[in-house]
Image (tube, rainbow over all chains, first blue to last red; front, side, top):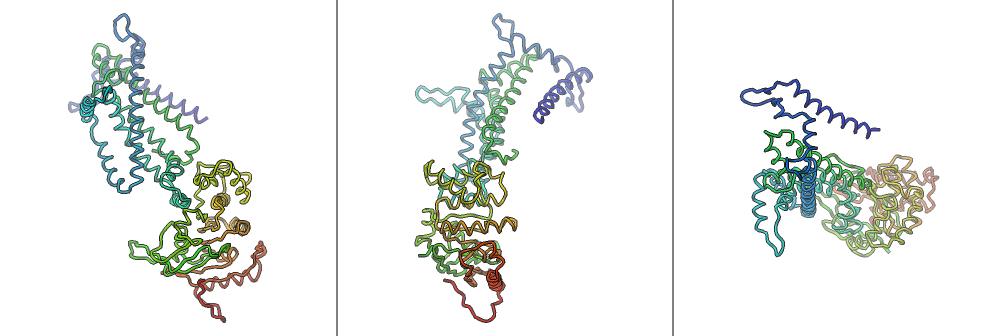
Amino acid sequence: MTRLRAVILGALGIVLLGVLWEAYKALGPAAGFEAFGIQLLPRTSDLAMPHLIDMLDRALSPVNTAADSQPVWLTVTLACLSSLGTAAVGLAVGAVVGFGLALLMLRFRIAESAVLPWLILSQTVPLIALAPVIVSWGGRVHIGEFEWQRWMSVAVIASYLAFFPVAVGALRGLQSPLAAQVELMHSFAAGWWRTVLHLRLPASVPYLIPAVRLGAASAIIGTVVAEVSTGAKGGIGRLIIEYAQSGSSDPAKAFSPIAGAVLMGLATAGVVALVALTLGRFRSNEVPA
Amino acid sequence: MTAVQVTGVTKTFTTKAGLVTALDDVDLTVEKGEFVSLIGPSGCGKSTLLRLIADLDTPTSGVIEVFGKSARQARLDQDYGIAFQTAGLLPWRSVAANIELPLQLHGVDRVGRRQRVAQLIELVGLGDFARSFPEQLSGGMQQRVAIARSLAERPELLLMDEPFGALDEMTRERMQSELVRISAETGAAVIFVTHSIPEAVFLSDRVVVMSPRPGRIRKVIDVKLGDARGEGLREESAFFASVTEVREALHGAPATGTARGVDTR
């Protein structure tokens, strides 16, 4: 019953957003509202705010006038899948690195004091500043047949965002067992690794699930932003820029890749939730992120 | 044959308030199969002493031998089982899997584990709950699981730190009777930390009365209530006499008449 309620409320929210959009477009001032030279409310012209139905219509029609042109939605979907693959690689790398750092900090107290400030500092570096550096480093990697690809730089940047919530969440989770439980493992003469395997790792699951959910969202954002700033081809980030540039002549087109990026984020959250379902036994005391 | 031999053990902690002497030159011997309670007010070092025997902490000076070995070696050899005030069960493991944990850690094969767990579940009377999870059990039942787990490796020494401290009085008395039966069936020596006088008297062959600041053994009282300890024992005058003796030792008012030396065998 509560599930049905949630679905209905969620759908109502989307409908409400659509109604608000169309209502403002119909009733708002045509030139928008400006104060002290700052645009506070957008213009309501078709150029700035296309009708929802136009966006939908544009999504279903071909990308351009070429004879073999794909419909926009298909191009967007393919771009999303490409970005999703990159983001998944980024998340996987980020999760492994994040968990590894958490283990290191768990094992060595001194590592926690030494590494944690750097982790926090690392997240204050603007992604835009980082992207060209990583691309140029990647460009110098030639190992035998292996050639560094542009998308790999994007994945590295995505992992750079994704590892942080995983590291922090995993550390909290690994440190969550009670003193009595840890001493019990000690009394069983279980070493550090066995204690991690049988006690700390299962105990960390309720902390890891929200951490990975955050990490996945960060990986998506990182991928899109990195595609934009590195100019990687094939992804949704590139498409957002490309379609936005045709905004003056074809304003409804730009909204398709944006919707695609949103759906991509939702799909990722859904996948994490599905994985979490299989771990039900370990989630009796899940904590909110 | 002695199970535990504590000789001249001192333990100090450094706190913000300065140096605290938790245990000061303590001697104690526990024989095989003997049930010994440690009782005293908070800060008398009774839990500290238990933790030292369990090698969860190391003494500042002095020697602890468990079955003739160092405490550390005894822990590595799994010569003792331990139960705390909090059952410390793993919530993602069923009752059976919780009891099985020490066996699994020590590489006992699946068949051996299943047999031993079945015995233990029977021993603590949890037959119908093998597949239940800890959150579905009452506090008393969780503590039974913890006791079964502590017995998994057939230890000859059981260390218990106020295992019934969080239970209500009725459950507590029932668990005490169970523990008397279990310790008789397994023949293990038990060192039992408590701050309940009737509990200590009901369970023990000897009660070690401790005093705080610094933690010392004030008196060791022999409780001669025999091996048959039914519920009726709680009503007997011998029981009350021992309770009075322990209480007087605790409060520092010596029993009138026969002067007893501080017996720290």
